[in-house]
Image 1 (cartoon, rainbow, N blue to C red):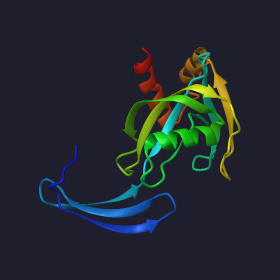
Image 2: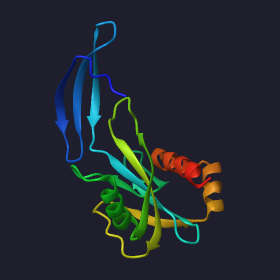
Image 3: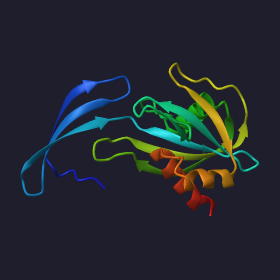
Image 4: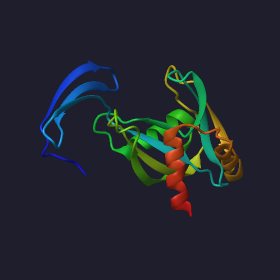
Length: 177
């Protein structure tokens, strides 16, 4: 749901390889102007790889922003105008080494809509075939295969703290119920 009737001005403050920062000034309903800084992002995908035996492939991923290794589902940024399913297949193979025969959408969500326009597209990948990962320079990852019971324990213990992973697991629980 968008509100196209509002008066909006945009100023690009900074451009990085994968995103831009804009200052956006817009009219509130009462007519006053308000300014926010927004991160413009092309969107991303998150993939839940499920092996034939029911195990889920998570990755241990070092995240410099929080200076921690997190347990996550594989994910990645869309290229300009790239369909989300194409990104999902590419990122699944790059990050885990797995390729899939079936990719099903689970849903979409916004990461942090107060400051970031990034929309995540969540997928379930099945019919997996193991191969060689092609991780980018700077990606310090390793695959972690977990049973549904182990996944439940990781969630119960608060060991999964990545929002895209938590959101996708919630969408998957609805799908698999």
